[in-house]
Each structure stands twice: as C-alpha cells, then as structure tokens.
Image 1 (tube, rainbow, N blue to C red):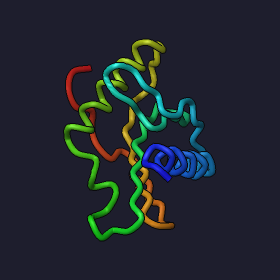
Image 2 (spheres, rainbow, N blue to C red):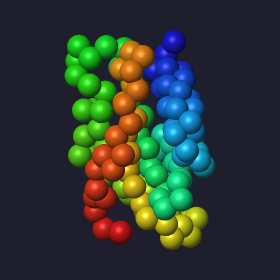
Image 3 (cartoon, rainbow, N blue to C red):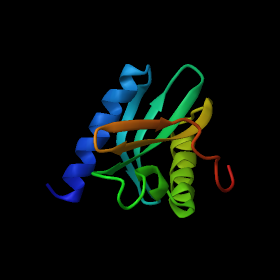
Image 4 (cartoon, rainbow, N blue to C red):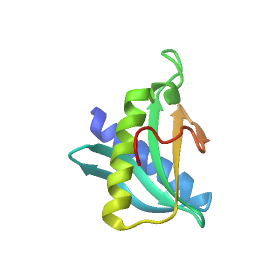
Length: 117
C-alpha cells in the first residue's frame, strides 16, 4: 500500500470513529491551493477541522507529534478560506485524530488558530 492509499484508509477509519462520537463529517480531503485538510466536521456549536495522523508503531514518536507549527498554520489558512467561501458563522475548532497501530486518540481543541482571521 502506498502512502496516499494508506492515508486515505486511515482518514476513513478516523471519519467512522468521529461519526460514532456524534460528529457530522462534511468534507474529506478538502484541497485548495493553500493546502489540504483531512476531515471537516461539525457538531452543534463548532465547525471542526481535523488532521489525521497514523503510525504503525510509536517507535518514531506518537502520530500527533507530527503536527508541527508549520502544519498548524497551513491548516488554519485553509480553514479560514473554507469558512469564508462557505459563509460559515460557527465557532472554529482544530482537532487531531492520532492512530497508532489499533489505538485511536482524539484530541479536541488540539491547537489554537494561527495567523489572522
């Protein structure tokens, strides 16, 4: 399995997990010229931008540790454009779903918005 296929498979696993937790998935693999967001979901109060990270093992660190400040900034820029283009007025939240082997961890409010809104 190549990286893209693996990424897509684990994004689907993350989406299914989040649906069971009550999150409505609006978009998968949302891409624009500024970058991409793995999953976009919503609950009653929030529009949620979700980064999914997978590792087979934790021998090189936990998956969630790979969401660098640079990656956070890119996600925030894409999120800002998404909200503007879709005229979204809900609160914005940034989550990470970390999958290591069979373990799924969901970090809500994993980071704050970076940059101008």
